[in-house]
Image (tube, rainbow, N blue to C red; front, side, top):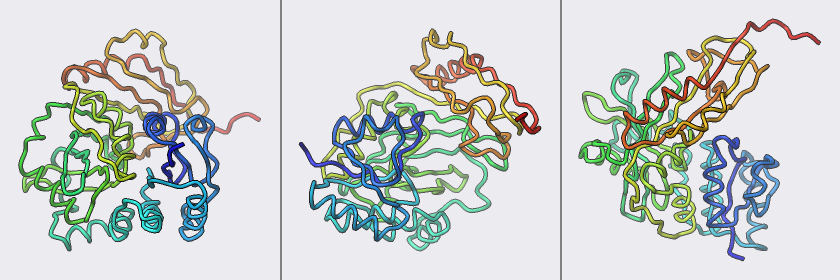
Length: 347
């Protein structure tokens, strides 16, 4: 049996995590180090190390003991806060990793802005509130930096500005923008990133691209699914290959578009109804439509919502972004939502 990869930290909810975990498990056995895994993840796991990733030294010892007995060929995490621990564990095991200073900075937005500024990379400032939001889904192969795809994000209302929609298009014209590519490459070099998949957030301002975030692990919000559906590039398998010292296949095999839409509550209160019309299964462009809350839950209106307040999401595929947008609009009609006041429920 081949040696497993270590996944540090509890995996995401099935709605957002199953796609990536299934892809990784198809290529490598996966051992989770963290709290008890949720039931949906069990079929994809080859083992479990009981540990608290927030307690770095104790977790490193537990992982080292497991590695001495069974072997570990790579370390992954999907959690920003666990990046420093993942870097330390990989260093202890002599496996590919990002620098610990970079890991610590990427786990702290303020520290990241400071580090980028010290290394002559222009981070987005408080005044950079206008301009499109994009992210470069980047694969770093030793010294080669490849932008596998660009994700365009539509933010929701302030002050929360949670993402309403992400779109990936294999023929996005920004892929050929020299200023954007230069910013991505300089960011990767400045942070010493290698052998990793990295999600680099950018705001396209009148002064040029400004870095909003650097996430040196698989992006969330099902962005890996969108990239795979639009370009054929499997970011999850690429991340696993890079973590184990391999070279992934990152040449595009599709020339399409894919998009995801998130539904947030229109009011703060308690969900009294959240239903999905099964007729959505007959929508030709629909890839999936998933409810992520249930009647009885307390939710917060979109203006102040967080990711946990999302009611549902749906994914559409098409030849280009306008086709995806039309499909997302049609699919929204299959969702039936009602929110009531937060009166105490009867015993």
